[in-house]
Image (cartoon, rainbow, N blue to C red; front, side):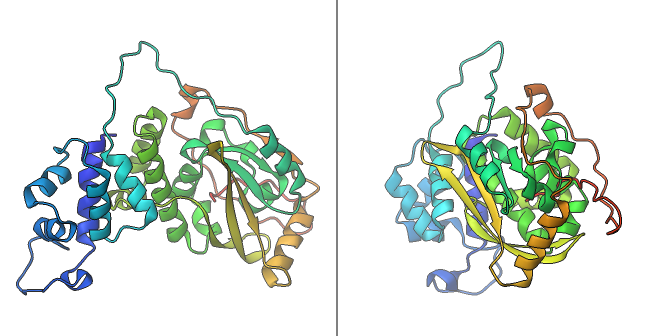
Length: 324
């Protein structure tokens, strides 16, 4: 991933979504050659010369100051996540030293997060690591999202499941919204770790295998994973509306505990209780995923078949995960 190229593409996509009337500039009419504001208009709004802005957009301006970047963020109406992403893209990167054997970081779920998973018996929860890898999960997460233990370690990745497993489109009522949020978070990760080879491999794989991912990736959405609402259509209990929270330790932001909960005294709360009671006899009490090896972490996933809905008279089969 080349930061200079990403910086220019990011600025162009943000220019293209603005119109003169959005920023109190006169619209002189006439046909514009490109969508959105012109470079000279952004330069005027940010208080920099047109030549300097062009060099920034082309990646030819070394180390623009924080003041200039903040001025561009205001001119482009960037939110806080986008502003931070802009600063990361514009930071100078040290020259990489040649290494005969690349070293890959081995991530394991923190012990405290594992203990929390065991305690959260009635709350679907999982631990998300770098690149949105699923490091650990509890029985309730298996009931809601599928059995991560049934997947190979390299396949326990949220965007890979979301875009490459057809069952994901059936599980999420608003699949396109959820999937685009995953793309936005991967962009956030790419800004934090532009030299991560496993992240680059994942992005390349998804760009080739998913037209939706490729299209949304080109739009440069950027968003940290925080909290929100997800709507599910579960094959066992039907529709659920759950809120999710992303909890991170201050000293280790690369791991997050993600929890799902229903509002008390609602149909979703009753449906979630029924689902957990129904699947409790066959679901594991807790599961901690082994850390994948570097070779496995970049291997293409095997096709995953959608899970059939079991009959009530039969033992509930373990369903494969369908994203988060």
